[in-house]
Length: 301
Image 1 (cartoon, rainbow, N blue to C red):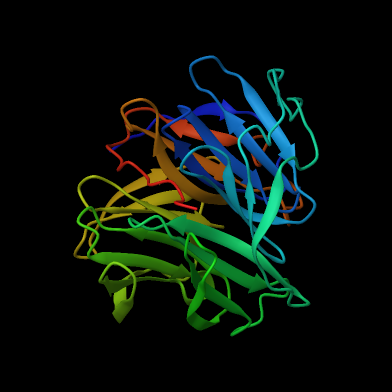
Image 2 (cartoon, rainbow, N blue to C red):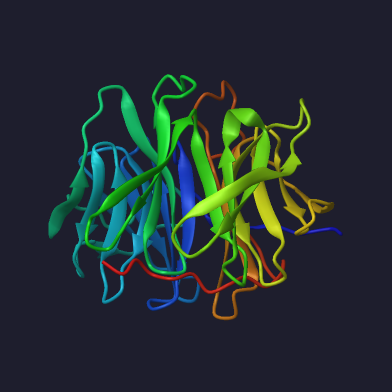
């Protein structure tokens, strides 16, 4: 299949990541990890906002009742409704409104020198599955933890290098997960809170990049962004590669379905580490009508 991309948000994010469709506000939330920024984009009005965080931010997800849960360098925190500044942006760059953190509190704080937050996802029960990694990407330096709405934390995986894409099957019985340096997309059995039976769904061939963020569509297929692979791939539930979306940027980082009918695939990108980045590296791309996504739950805390 041939896909035509459009530029949703032209930007120069160092490490754009974590696109998430906020159904309640009908907007896209995305982040720049190394820029310590949480961005939003309304595709209908074109309105953009940006909020500065005091630490590198690995993920930002909507909360039930408003506000955001954020996976920060030193733990997981909560912003109340209205914690973001809003403003119109220009046609390019990151010139929207900005502010420092507003109504913020820590839900779980755990300072580990040399470690930062990375990707996170909200499970069907409203808990946050939050990943970490070392800045030097040392094997075994990262974790994947389940953070309950009350702040209770359970470490699920404690031998991770770069904790990345996490998502669930439409029936909630499977969890997909990526530790990027392994080049694997793994699948677990999921009982609502616990995982087991880890096995490989698919592997990315050497020379085609590394799997980064993922999203699961309404057919149960897994879409994966390939860092240094310049593409997004879709795998069927049995691990068959059935679609490839070629992109002009070398470092797509993550993808998510959004829009009123969840048919538009948004793709974040990065420019960090590139000696000659593509002009769109760091922007958010969108492929209208790429498929059909699943509604994403909000964090229940």
